[in-house]
Length: 532
Image 1 (cartoon, helix red, strand yellow):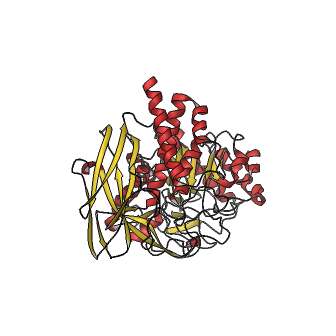
Image 2 (cartoon, rainbow, N blue to C red):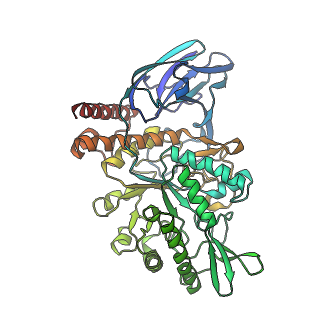
Image 3 (tube, helix red, strand yellow):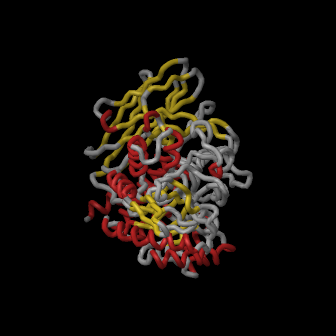
């Protein structure tokens, strides 16, 4: 059996021997998690078990890396920073467990996550496969990284839970599964959650509907509306209990231009439920304006009563284009008036929206980030399927992991305050025309590059199966926190000197560069801590 000890930035394919150098030594802080891999080629068919030093077993989680079938690896227009642009099986799924049923001649990988908790100093960890022992050396620095300052939202899709598990929205079973998915998100750096006041008007074909996931209860009472926020209160409580700090209220108007309202369900005097707003509701609807104005009174009182004033963001419409500025501004004027004092954020890459006061916090895509850097009060960014060019960071399955992880270093260098990505668990086809099985379809049935629409898989009994991309992206936030710690100790100039002249479009593409950079950051922090 051939065995190799690899970093978390390598992807092991069944038909290819990893050609990178082995990496067997790291440094980390007490409150970090360190991911690494043990790759092997089996010399015969059979069960292969990974065994960890008994002393360290309580601190190490083990996963068997599984393949995800990829059809759309990359768009034809994409740059060349991909592992491959061809369809095939790509490593992505982390199945909990230390056993792999291997076939002779094929390559496999175990993924390890080391969380030292109360250990410090030099550690030597023995890991064995089939009697062959590999040793990992880890220096645990006796200090902690600061809390993550960057606000990170990866859009949470409640309908995916309902549809995949066949549970009713807000039933006891839904809430049990919800807790699992939210906790996994917060455990991997997500501290802000998309909150479906009404079924999110996102990625839905015109005239179509997604499964209703509405937190605001609405009752028709003659010509007036009564609002019930009991579900919203329960949602907030569950999210706070499971590590979420900020709440991003779902968009009040449809995607790509704010031309319609989201689907809004209400009960009438007889108790029957019906849709009262939706695709038939035009931008200039006075009745919808009246509805939102009434809601704002109730919602603002709820926010203040629950101590959420500095934890809430509002949306108007996702990704409006420059030709939709007038419509967007019309909608923005209402939202900014009825929710005065609360920030409005939206993913948009045209600076005119901010210049004209339509949005408080614009969220430009990474490839437009230079147009906003130094020109906005609060600096956020996002990536999605469109960020396939110019080498900007992204998380497609066919991309090398260094392209996922480099985001954290860049975010620290640019002082990024917030980051948005649209698909934590989107298990639909493009425009939500069909439901999909994420274990069989990773590209929304050809709508996006594989991996754009989700980073977690639904497990049995409502458990969450992580992708290796989720772990690598979390590593990027740990890098961000390390650089912020160094800044606090030695200043921004020192931090920038270490990272060098990198930009979102221009940085070294080698995994070794990023791993070595992190070691240098840790060394500088240690030196500064000792001198204090």
